Length: 116
Image 1 (cartoon, rainbow, N blue to C red):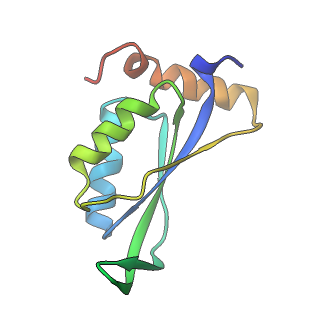
Image 2: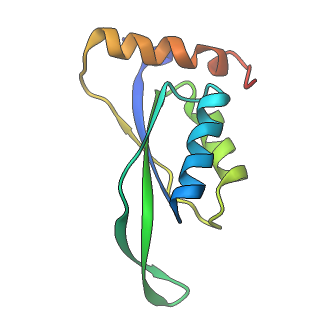
Image 3: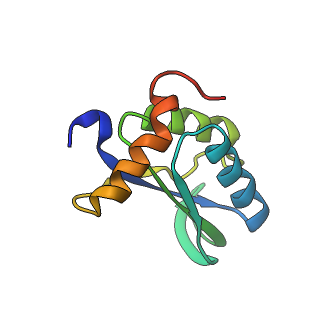
């Protein structure tokens, strides 16, 4: 699979279900990903502003391509309510060829410059 079609998973935590749903819908509407899974609430513990914070968050698992990632990252930074949102991209090392082809097909318009 060439770089243009390389599939990735992007993780992004959200402060609540309302925010997660709005971000998921926006990502799909902009064709920045083929699929976004909104996961169940998780408890996150992290350093922030000189202390340790604990918060309930809703993770998004976003399936997209490496070529679409820059626009996805820019879109998330513009629309996410956090000052410093978690945006982490991980490669998909293997997968069903038909599923990976579907991801590439669904994100092709964003890779070519259209974000609806």
